[in-house]
Amino acid sequence: MGLEGAESLLLQTLQKGDRGIDLSVRAVGGRSARAWAPMVGARWMPWPGTRAPSYAAWGADLVHLTGLTVAPPRHKPYALTVHDCLALRFPDEVSPPPWFESVLHRATGVLTVSQATAGDLVDLGVPPEKIHQMHQGPQIVGGARPDNLPEDNALVVLRSGGYTQRKNVGLLLDAWPRVHLLTGARLVLTGPRSGPGYPAEQINRLQAHGVEDLGYVGPRELQRLYETVHLVVSPSIGEGFGLPALEAMASGVPFVGTRTAFFEELCADAAVLADAEPDAFGAQIVRVLSDVALRRDLVGRGLSRAKNYTWEGAALEVVAAYQSMTTK
Image 1 (tube, one colour):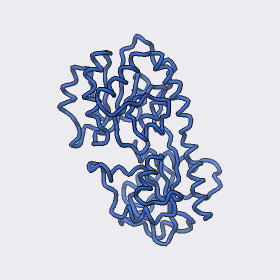
Image 2 (cartoon, helix red, strand yellow; image 1 turned 120 degrees about the horizontal axis):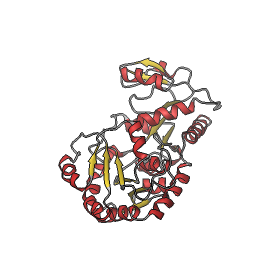
Image 3 (cartoon, one colour; image 1 turned 135 degrees about the vertical axis):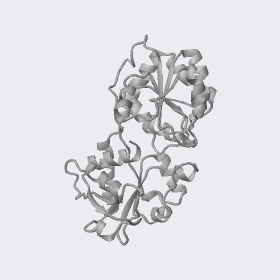
Image 4 (tube, helix red, strand yellow; image 1 turned 135 degrees about the horizontal axis):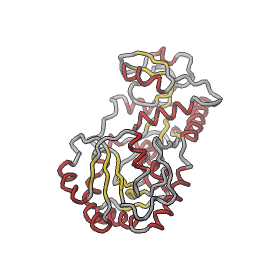
């Protein structure tokens, strides 16, 4: 689901109940905007250009760009959501539009989803007082299992996502043969088998070590996986938020990730974090898989931590940001 899923869930939540604001959602663009509009209760405004037309902002005190598909209309105060700045650090990520930085610095306010990304925005020259943090909620939640499955079930580890440089999947694959030797666990990979970073040969070699690549799976299948695995892992070294970690915690599954600012912020003490190095990362996977009591403790901590991240909470933070921007 990704960023589009996050935008949809936020907009759907914002339109529920009395928020004390008059909210009008407008989808500006071509066919993709037309398809997206009914999903979020938006009015479609066909437009072929890269800047939103002035009529798209008629009657608005503030325009909120939830994505970066079109630049804001001229002569209107606007807010901008920036989920991450990863394309400026990793060359294989989709580049932001050429007008990104100029629009960023002219914005009345910038909404972002983590302190880590807020720090990146400050590094780009955005004044801290312009930055408003909102949390996200999970997009997929499996049925929570307090006991993290019976002890006699074959151990299964899940890693989901893409294969770009920042996802750092090679770290996990390098660590896996020893994990499999010590635990007998299977590793299930999900995500599109595409792009220059997809390690097809390494994955094929590791099939003998319990690695199974499912490719892309839809939301229902991913939900089923959350309900059946013993552990979710992410070797990522670059995230705006860290959605797999949140979905694991909300689903009652322990999580092992890299010791990075975004996972430390999101998970606190509800996950096991390791250095981004194969031996250290693999050792923590083995530790969690080998200790049922630790897994159950992480499940409880994760479920409690995940309660802090809901779409209702995100909507309240966004409305507070709107009010701050329009009363200055």
